[in-house]
Amino acid sequence: MLDLQKSSRNTPTPHIRRTPFPGPLTKHQCLSRLRHPKFLIINPWFRRNLALHYRARRGRVQVFRINVSGAKIVDSASEDDDAGNRDIRLPNHTKQVSHIAVDIGGTLAKVVFFNRAPEDGLGGRLNFTKFETDDIEDCIAFLKQLVDSRREQQQQPRNTGTGKKTRGGRGSAGQDEMCVMATGGGAYLFYDRLKSELGCEIVREDEMECLISGLDFFITEIPDEVFTYSEENPMAFEEPREDIYPYLLVNIGSGVSMIKVSGPGANEFERIGGSSLGGGTLWGLLSLLTGAKSFDDMLEMSQKGDNTAVDMLVGDIYGTDYGRIGLKSTTIASTFGKVFKKNMSASNGTGKPEFKPEDISKSLLFAISNNIGQIAYLQATKHDIHNIYFGGSFIRGHTATMNTLSYAIRFWSQGSKRAYFLRHEGYLGAVGAFLRHQPRNWGRRKSFGEDGGQRIFQATRKE
Image 1 (cartoon, rainbow, N blue to C red):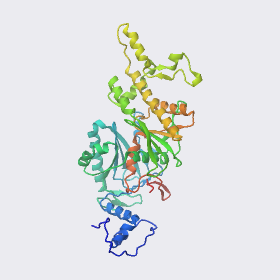
Image 2 (cartoon, helix red, strand yellow):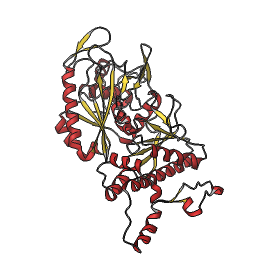
Image 3 (cartoon, helix red, strand yellow):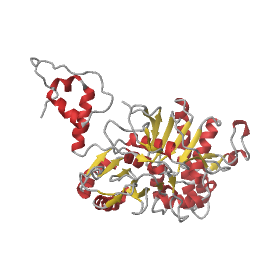
Image 4 (spheres, one colour):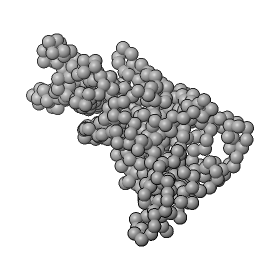
């Protein structure tokens, strides 16, 4: 093995070309230059090329390019289906996809994978599904099925889109080694278990970078994905665009992270704040105060609730609006502000009053959402950012949550800042991990190519 760190001072330096080559070196060029050890030390650019080829031989380097031409969110066949789980149709992506992505958070584990169209069709679908992290064994069992299915598919002949069929297999040209791209805290917590039970390589990716890669992809490439929300116009979709920086990503999962993204570079993002009061807080409090068994049960209860039964409003104090400072009579002055008064009144009567779990659910949902919205506004103001994207599984397309967050941003910024939401808001990290199945010196966006006049998304990292 060649030692790149040591060299003999008495060894004469060969005449070598020190200017960069016009493109990446081939494997043959890399190996032919091994006869000149000094070249490896002097030219770090060459060392990177050699490292890429060396890792490629071990199956570590993958280049994943996704054809997003004609991409479209598939309409659900049932109104009961979760809108955030709807597939994305990729009719022009014909290359084999052998990897799977999973984002394991403190509350939910989100899975993203690609399924090809039937044998006589082209393209395929990007699929989305989720599990509660407490039921991680169900998630791992599902991943195991996908891994086994991918291995079988690699042995089957496939349509390349040119009328010819090729047979895949381990080590075949154009075939990737089976692996699972994992992100989130669970990628570390459950790493050994994933590796042993799935029997394939588990590639762990940085959580923040994956969130940003996923959001960049949705903003720039997927029609009818990003939208604004208001009571007057519930879902006003935004067209995909590329002039997206700077922006603030507010990712609401178990907790809340706020990330300022200044550009497409690897070091052009920063976590500028957050809050421990997030989805996990709501879930925990409602588990204590209501009989809800899941987060979806809590959201469903909140839709039927009336928060004014427990919250004190401006109208309860003034009897009307407080127009001088812009407060409506329906503005919440104190979360759970009526509970103490009702308890005191009941103590003089027959006993404690009973509060409906639906009313408690709606009150707490408003409290958490208002708090996040105001912190997001303050961070955006401090860093002079006008576009705020809300992601994470806390939202889940829930209208009361989106309306509260959107209203908070409009109210405090007096309309100078905009709140954006996504139909797949809970899958930013998983999609980002899916896209990052590629060389280590690549990572995010800004490498759009043309393939027969069709749009190609290839996440890349600027050096």
